[in-house]
Image 1: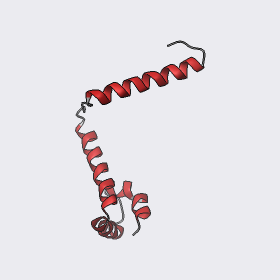
Image 2: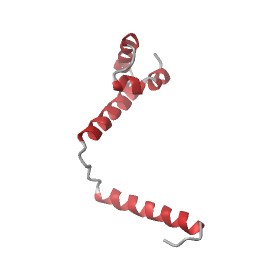
Image 3: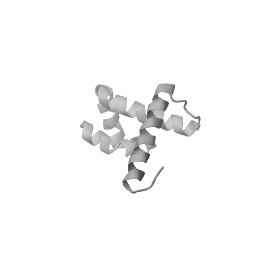
Length: 85
């Protein structure tokens, strides 16, 4: 199995709906491919965090940068339409 094939089947694998015959190939590929391991691990962690429903506190600096960027984008978008914020 190649990385592209693995990525195409990733949702089914994580959901547990991939064909069991393919599942073995998938796991063999993962055993020897660190980049694919990282992708699968990140998706699993994201799903786990989502299912737990726990809010995640963003680091203060990141929160401020994100807020400024969103504010700037909103202003640019609405100023271009002749609307004021």
